[in-house]
Image (tube, rainbow, N blue to C red; front, side):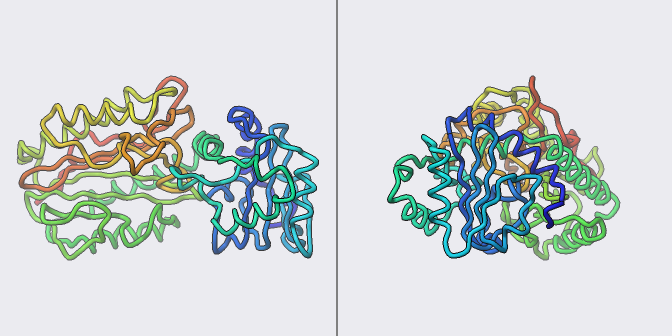
Length: 398
C-alpha cells in the first residue's frame, strides 16, 4: 500500500463514523493495536485496510478528525486519503498519545472490548494493561468505556460497496449450488461433494467464509451428526436427504447459505420430510416478513421459533440469524433467544443496512435434519432477500 492508494470502502465506512460517535456518546474512539498480522483487531480492515507493526493508536472524533499515531516505518505507508494527521514516533508512543488526548480532551474514550460481541472485542488484555499504564498519569484512564455499540453500528450498517460485495458473494455461492444440481448423483461421498465445491471455488478465485475443513458442511442421510462437522465417507443413497451449508468470501465479504436435496423424484418425497421442509421454509418467510428496523433481535427469533413449536417440533438449539459481512459471523445484533451464551446481542435493535442470515433446522425421525439458510438485507421498511429462497426440495435422480 502506498500513500497515493485509494481506499473507497474504508472511506465509506469512515464517513459513517462521526454520526455514530455522536449517537453513542463517545467523544474519542481509540483503536489500539500492535503486530496486527499476528493479532488482528476485527475493525482494522474497515478503518485502515492494512497491518501495523509497532504499538499504534488510531483516534477518531465526532467532528470527523482522524489521527494515526504509528511507528515511523509504518507511517511511511499510511493512507493519506484516509488520515490527514499522521504522527510518527521512534522510541515510544506514550508521550505522543498523551499529548493528543490532551489536545482533544475527550470526556469518553471508546476501546474495543466487549463481553457479548467478538467483533467488538479486538483489544487484548496485554494491550489494555499497557494502555492504562500510559494513561495512569492523566485523567483519561477513568474515561475509558466499551466501544461495543459503536463497533456494532459501524460494522452492521453496510455501506453501498459492502452491500455490493455481499451480493456478489451470494451470487457466486448460488451459482455453485446450481452446478451441484448437475454434479450430484447417488453413491457419492460427502468428501467427493465437498471437493467439487472446493475445486469450483479455486476456479472462480473466491475464498472461504469460514474454515475450509468444515466448509461446505455436507451431511448425507440420517446417520450423521448434524452441525459444523467435517465431511466423511458417508454416501448418498436413494430416498435420502443431503444437507449443504456453504459460504464463500469475495473481495473481503462473505455469504452463508444452506440448501436441501432429496435423492428421488418429487412425487416420492416422504410426507415426514415434506412437512419438515415446509415448516423450515415457512418459518424463514415469517421471520423475513417481521424483520425491519427497530425490532429487537430476540423478537425476530421468537417469530420463527414459535412457528416451529406450533408445527410440533422442538425449538432449535441456536439463534435464528447472525449478521454477515467481512466474516460469515460478523458480530453486532443477533437474531437469537435471550440465552446466557449470547449475552446482550439478542437485545440489540435491527438497523437498516444490516445483513442477516435466517436459518433453522427441524429433525425428522427417519431422514435426519432438514435445514435451510438465506441471506437478507434490512431495508428502511423491511428486508430484501439477497439469496433466492429455496421453496422446494432440490430433487436429484436416483
